[in-house]
Length: 332
Image (cartoon, helix red, strand yellow):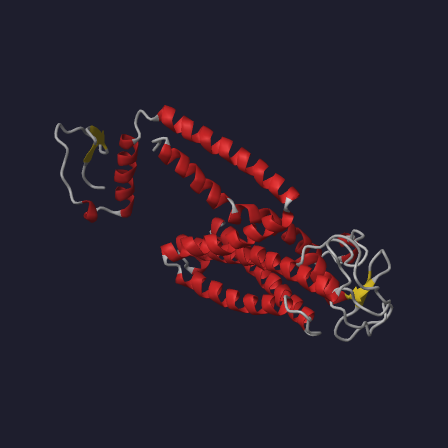
């Protein structure tokens, strides 16, 4: 700024120049540069919150206690009533971002959210019908596996753009740092959000389909006896022997000796988050299933998405609850 300006807020005067004036200078804020506007807002914020250190410490304490208590409640809820916990979490993840993006007028996200919701609603409807059509399991796993791969690729590209921007590579292409960072963060958000949401919908559909087919039961014994030539995930015959190379897909045998379509068991374990045999419930060795080192990041990415479920679904609710407590106690 070429000149000197003083800002007085709530009786507190702040000098933002090289000298001091007895009277605060009057100026038009709209004529200031973005950096100067930020300095003015910064001065106003300090003036407003001066002497509130004890109040701020109390607010931090409320936040920490609420986070600890909320985490304990959520863990107990998940252990005692996993079905209701998963349904509520799924609803939270589906609705909470919709509220904020609608409020901020992020129309691009709303468009992708609408397309995702329509297709996923149709697939979920097919997965919950009885009797289950023979083509439905393949349709469900194809859609959610495709969504999983797209979200994985989108997240990787977004992360790469963010890192390239931090190293200044965007300047080679004459792209502004703020534009490159916004693009990278947006891609990262899209990839992680739809990855988390898609996996939860896939888990719900996998439970419905497997219980309908009859070779899987979440509690108790399956209602059908599994033959050696039937896939317990989709209930369809296995046409390719384990030792043979399939044209479209191979047949996979678990350590418990039950055989499945490779596409089905991968969708069941990775997308549907079921790390056990659909029939006998023996734990699946994912390292053995994904012997190719290039495929193992899919497992780690799935674990990352499971961790992000808490941040996407419950963190905004907890923060809103904390703000409500602060409002009731008169803390600002």
